[in-house]
Image (cartoon, rainbow, N blue to C red; front, side, top):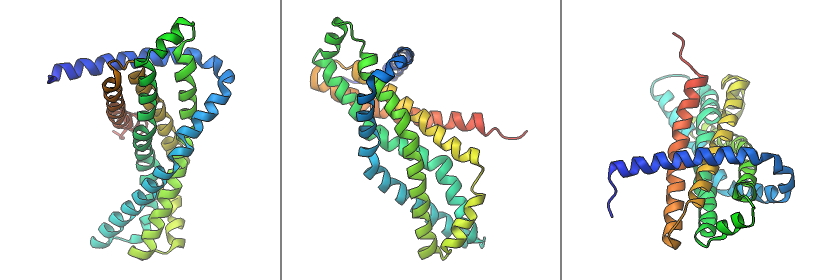
Length: 258
């Protein structure tokens, strides 16, 4: 079956409406978070600790690529390479760290959320919870949202540090910038608000990908094939919303001076 552009747009609008309603219901369930402490801790491990290997590799090599390309371009144009620390630090902390971490987590954890909840949905376990007057938003979605809201900012800080370290290695052994010069220039990477802005973006991205993934899982229908479609849509929609939200946040915080 081929989908037209209208079908895709309608599906996206419907998914956005469902996600907004789900987010509102989950916010109303946050008062029950202390009673789900054990589940929240388990989800923090799933969201954060289990993501560390992939996030580590992504962050280190991203920092290395940014430093390598920036240093090579500076040297090619005859500009001082000693500012490399400021360039890498600002790029990683404000943009590359939060965005790439969110993309990795969306594919790794968001897809997992969608597949788990999708399997429960097609097996009618979600309907069973509702029959027993147990809101799925409280039992399944709220712990995941709280866990992601805690884990994502920490992952962003971790990715920033590794990215800067990866950049330092390339700066020294490929570009010829000493560690002392590289890290000394980090003080020009930006203000504290820039670093906090990157961490805040990680929080926003984490909330977005969790709500989108859980919504797709809860809406899954049609057996194993439906679970596969829900997982694919969760990952794709999360990627798109991360990019859109990144631009919107940048536009709101860093408005050009007129």
